[in-house]
Structure formats: C-alpha cells, structure tokens
Length: 169
Image 1: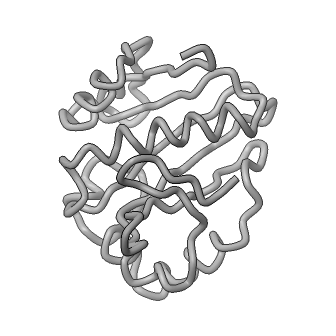
Image 2: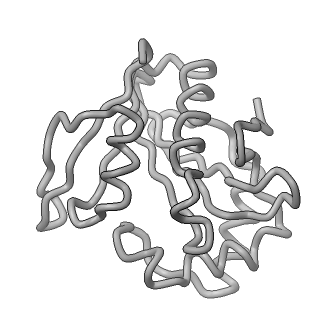
C-alpha cells in the first residue's frame, strides 16, 4: 500500500529519521496557525514519529498519520491525518505541509494520492475535508481540486467550511 508516489510527492510511513523535520514542521507557528494540534517539542516529535512508524493503517474510529516526502531526496515535507469513522463509511482527511513546501502544488497531489489510497484500501464512500475559513490557501487548493463546500461547522468558535470528496470523484 505504501509507499505511493504521485508526481512530486511520495506518501510513506514515518521513520525515526523524520523526527527532526517533523519537529520543525510542528513547531512552526505559521504552519500551525490553522491546525487543531499543539506545537511539539523535540522529545514529543520523536515519540510521535516512533509511534507512527508502527501504527496500523486505517484504524476504525482512530487516526493514522502518513508522511509526505519528496521523491528525490525522501525529505519529509508534511503529513496527512486520516481518520476512518468507526463504521468505515467516511474518512476525515487533514493535511500539514512545511512552510517551505507550501505554494508548490504539493497539497493537491497529496490529497489526490490519499483519496486513491483511501478508496482502494477502505470501505469509505466519502472523504471529509474541514478547514478554517481564514485559511485562504487551503480554500484555493480545495477549489482547484473541484470540491465545493457542503456545510459549515462552528465548533471552534469560527466558521469551518466542510468539503466532501466521494468515491465516484
């Protein structure tokens, strides 16, 4: 199932050698501005990466983190969070890219690759993408992918547009 190469990205499992790059990504306040996670210190990043190395894929009712790397040098440039619903019918997808990897067309490639993976390996019929309404860059990515907003959540105290990607897409 992994690694999966698409264009300028490779989806793969995390490795302990990713810890420093993961720390850099997850401690950058600009990268975390629209995310729901808290910044990680170096020890937290190492613990997280070590745990992600052996996580089972697509646990029902849980998250699975997948590394996004560049194919040439295998450098970690981000990750995908994939949360399969307990009944397996829907998956929530979250994406994080290092600031240095943003604006290069990597996010749409990673989302398309993740959709291929999800629809090939799970019974999910729909992928849900939720973003902060203030995140203009991600809204542009989702529009470029041809997705339309289907709902708006207000759980965090601000609007969060909801987009769906279905198996037939």
